[in-house]
Image 1 (spheres, one colour):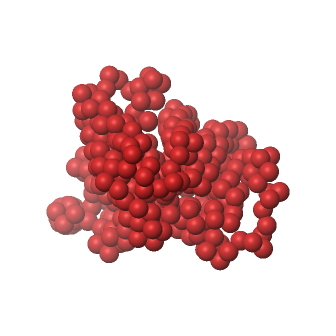
Image 2 (tube, rainbow, N blue to C red):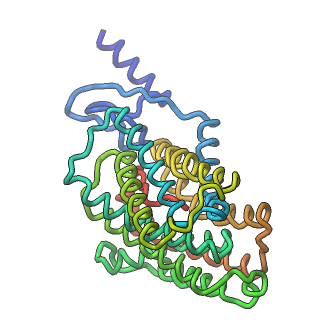
Image 3 (cartoon, rainbow, N blue to C red):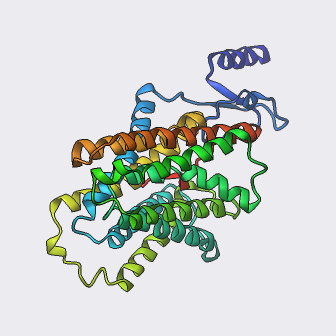
Length: 362
C-alpha cells in the first residue's frame, strides 16, 4: 500500500501536477523548485491546475491594453465631468465593488484602526496621483501623460534610496535614472511644442508631481502593515481616495459649476469604462497574473502601457506623434528597463510573486 502511494506521488510530481509536498497548501501556484521541498508537517499533496494559454493571453491583454487605454479614457471622461469629481466617482464605485467582492469571498471586515494606513495611502495615490493626472489631461495629450507617468519606477527607486530602504544604487540603475529623466526633458523640445498647443508647463509639472506623490505612497505602503487581502487593501485605498477626491472637488468649486444634464454619452461611457475595466477588471487580471506568471513577465506592462497610450491617442483622438515624442518614449522606456534590471539584480534572492496593487496605471 505504501509503495503504491509513493509511486502515485512520484508520478504526479513528474507530471507537474504536484508542486508542493508537506505543510499547508497555498491558494496560489508558485513556480519555484524550492516549493517541492519535503516539510516536517507530514506528506500532503497540493494538486494545482495550470493556467490555460487563453486565460494568460486574456489577462495580459487586459493589463496591456486596458491600462494603456485609461489615459485616453480620462481625456474623454473629463470633457464634461470635472476631473476631481470624475476620479472621485470612479474610485468610490470601484472601491465599493471590490470591498463587497472581498467580503463576499469571506475576507473579514477590517477594524477601524486598520483603516489608518490604507486611508493615508489612498489619499496619496488617488488624490495626489490620479487627481493631478486627471487635471493635467485638460492641458496635456493623453499619450504624453502616459510617458510621464511611465517614470514612476524611477521615482520609486530614488525615494526608496532616500528613505533608507534601498542600498547603494548600481551603475545600471544610475544609468537608467539618467536616461529616463533625460527622456522627460526631451519632451520639452521644440517638436513637442510645435505639434500641440495644449502642452504646457503646468500640466507637465502636475503629472510629474502626481507621479512623485504616487511613488511616495508606494514607499510608505511597503513600510507599514496592510491587510493581507490585496483586494480588500486596494478597496480601502480606493474608498478613502475617492472620498478625498470628492471632498476637494466640493471645496474647489467643481460641483458648483457641474451640470449633470450637460454630460454627454461619451463622458459617461468613458467613466464607466475607467471604473469597470480600468479599476476592477484590469486589477483582477493583474492580481491573478502574479499568482501564475513570473514577476518579470507581469512587470512588462510598464513598458507596454505608454506605447499603447501614445498609439491610441494618435489613432482615436488625433493626438500627433512627433519625432521628439517617439525619441522621448524610447529613451524613457530604456531608462525604466535599466532601472528595473538593476533593481532585480540587487534583490534577486528576495523576489516574490505577491502583487503590488500600487503599481496600477491611470
